[in-house]
Length: 226
Ligand code: FES
Image 1 (tube, rainbow, N blue to C red):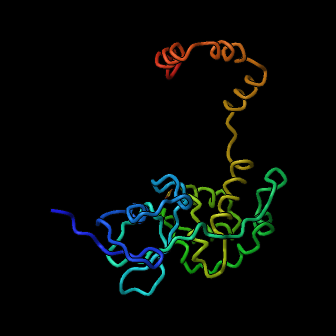
Image 2: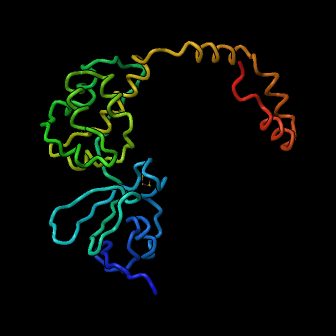
């Protein structure tokens, strides 16, 4: 027996789609070819932020199209991206301080702690909490608490104070990575070795091998040498 279809609306037009499809798959089932607003399809890249309403509820909701299952009578709208303020800066000219955050994103001080951002986050990040850390100038804490951010922009899209939480957070992660995170001694030693040409000969040799030989050596390599 054929599966019963459910009605949904995409950009105001009614379609019938099989139940259980994500918004992204339902759109494709309805004939849309997604050239923008789609990426990994797995909830990681943040490209598919979507606006929708459900039957009987006047509120506009936001979600990732690849992670949200359609409901009967759902109204779906896609916009190509969520516009948001993104300040230009040169990381190597900055200092990892509260002053830097405020200078680059003065709106950081406008946060009202309303929590709308936290409710909008498809990653279940406590955005309000990391914004409180930003207002305290705790860059390491912002970097840590926003680590799973996928930059979809839904927090900023819903913020009544017009903050750009995800851009503030990536600035903190960059500052943390460049200036505050403990340095990896092994990594700098390896970079020095590479720059000194230690692996040049081995690379030359590898480039001269056939595809088959390369595959054999790859498969037989020592995975965790002592
Ligand atoms: S397509 Fe990458 S998060 Fe949805």
